[in-house]
Image (cartoon, rainbow, N blue to C red):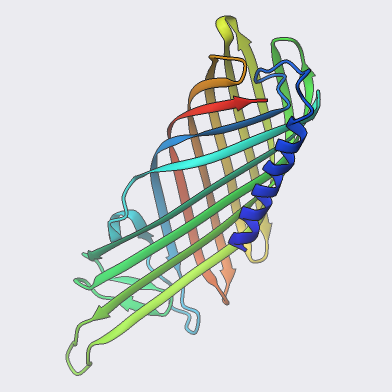
Length: 279
């Protein structure tokens, strides 16, 4: 499924690039360009809290701060976004983000994860993998020469995998043993959103975007939010320089005995610096 999400994002951007070949007569700026792609670096802080209950038992898992417990800290991450203005008031947007992290730590608390118990002092290899892909449609219901207000509907595809691996030392009459457990969930989540952009003097553009969705449908119950604010200075006809802030998070209770039974809280937020290319 992760490859499918990447392929969707790639195909969307290829379609945008093809359409951009026919856009030479369109003024190139963030409010008028046919095709825009943003690439840059994100200086992110994360907060991931997890509870994974037993698959074969009714044991309730531990509520774990995954980052602090297993030593997986903050990180910097590349992310790409693109948009295709198929008509003055109609846009298609695509985004792809992937984060793979791992760490090894001797844990300082007992952790119940799925059907396994990791005792205090166990050296645990922890891995987390997150993929987020988005495809959405927007309609600009307010549009003037210097501003635009658009509403949108789209799909966020979220793919999360967590694994814990350790060799647990002998205790009492029990011999040493290996423990290797994992949990994963994949969810295509619809979202509703608003985006506002305003042109300022001296080729500066300010934009704000908010997306939200709440879902309660077996096996999921929870919400997704995506908030973003940016300032772009258009340095040339084709290139702009931008800074901004993005906060993305989802909170779900999941009751899926096959893959993930428990609770997942994941959030990232931080500043970003990027280049925007307009065609």
